[in-house]
Structure formats: C-alpha cells, structure tokens
Image (cartoon, rainbow, N blue to C red; front, side, top):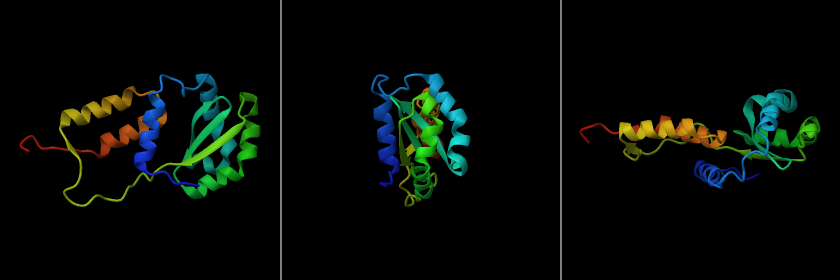
Amino acid sequence: MKKLNHASVMGELVRRNSRAGRDAPEDESVQEEIRLRWARCAGNAADLSFPLLFRSGRLVVYTRSPVWATELLHQQQRILSALSDLGARKMVVRTTPSMHPAPRPAGREARVSSTSQKNIAQTAHRLRHPGLRMAVERLAERVAVKDDDE
C-alpha cells in the first residue's frame, strides 16, 4: 500500500472538492449513517480511522497508520457486509500523512500575516469536505505568523 505524503493528500482533496460536487456523496444521510455505524463496523480500528467519502457503493476510509490500514483490509468483507443495506460494495483504505510531520530546518518555516492566518482558519471552517477541512485546519494551526515589524 502506498503511503501518501501530506502534499499529495492535500492536492487530492483540493482536486476532489473542486470538481463541482461530482465527488460529493449522493446522499448525505447515507454518509452520516455510515459514520454513526463505523465504531461497530470497524471494531478496534474505528478509533484510528474514519470513513471519509461514500459514493456509488464505494467507501473511502482513511487511517493514519499502515498497520491499521492492513487491519481494515483484513476486515473488509465484514465491514462491507455490515454496510451492505446502505449500498456499500467496495472499500478503499488510504493512509493519511502523520499528524506530526518532520520538523523543518530552522528559518525555513512559512510565514504569513495574522490576517492571512485568520483567513485560512475561516476558509477551513466553511469547507464541507471533511478531509479537506481537516487539512486546512492543520495548516492554519501550523503556519508561523510574521511579526508586524518584519
């Protein structure tokens, strides 16, 4: 299984969110029901994974650990059986980048104004796509704010 880096996950989520709703769930209530059932369906892996998208019978699940991705793949038939009444026929498991990326070398952090940092946070709040929202929220938290005298 290919581990996605932060940039490729962010790029993929931006592309998906900008396709004029083509990747939006067909029925938001179905996606919400999947999220509600996830703890029962995924068992021990539920705390370390989340169902991100459900469309045309295809469930996309993200986890932060390749170990849990493998566990979810082993449980795939059981999970799909538990969600079959909602139309789940296929499950794709992807590994998200670490929430604790390697530190940048000193002096190399991105620096933005406090106004820009607030705009990033507000943009994240308005996004409907949960994965993209999480990525932009992380960006807003991690960006270094320039001093006014810089």
